[in-house]
Length: 411
Image (cartoon, rainbow, N blue to C red; front, side):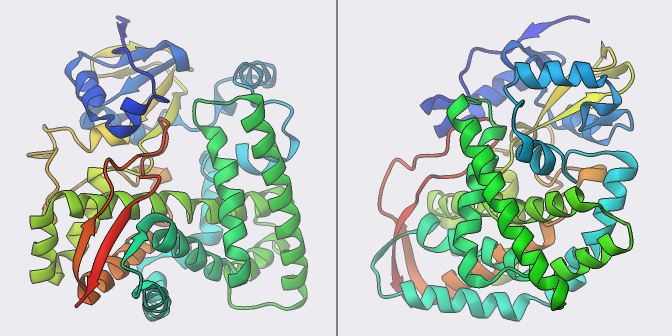
């Protein structure tokens, strides 16, 4: 197995946060996969390689099929994942990080509420919520699109689906962000304590909410999951792990892609004008937003047997880093890959993953975005960026602007 070394970079640096794509391009130019020693991981940057790994039947998310309990414990300690009792129970184990029968069983309990038919039933409710939110901001000449608008939509909608009161949704966002931050490469003791404390608080909140719903069933996901637990389809920890995952997934990544999507429209004003003139392009525009700046650009897999990827042989237990953010800018897959094109078709991007772990909430996220951008372009004849440069979040596993100050003028 030949070993090429990753081009020098620091995923926590300002330069990588502002524009990771030159690094991705350098990775794609190298033969085979590239070893990144800091993570002990083989990075896949080309679309073909990423697709092969995530669709391979010998690849898994969890280490349980490739390592003993003792080996897993050593790995957790090396990565500072240990001594986090609540985080281990409800975050380190999840629908996202399980495989095989467990993953299929848990996904089946919630999948039916995230189908296109079920999600589309929410259209009028989401539309009304967005219009009310925009109305409250419309008299302000300048807003932070991320904090004032984008941050208020995904969590509230997914909260309503689950059965969380509207007034509690802002706190759910805080818990979610403080938990998710520990999945990136900076796992200091301070960030560890923050993740564990917020997981604990999140669990006790959901525990009380579940107790209320057990005595007063409603037409929401919590009630559906309570019935699934009663029927033996999920246990106590699986119930809360799944509820947390759904709420966390409904927050950060959609907020990030809303921000980067708006930023793309502002960087490519001719594309925004195309959308104004042809609103029917909004669905392809939303897909292009996910391709152009994938909000979750890095995931991992382990191989359960020896596998050959990109002409290289890798032994059982190898960890692969799949760079969705790089694959979606691969010029071999996407002509003019660095251009933002609201009419791009076909657009078989991989921002939602592939195979068994294909994003459960992708239909809901795309509907949120469709409604938000359609509403804004209809209500405002002018939307402009009023502060540069736009600073993006630091890290390898996230991609989205920290804030996005825009000015607008009503139509």
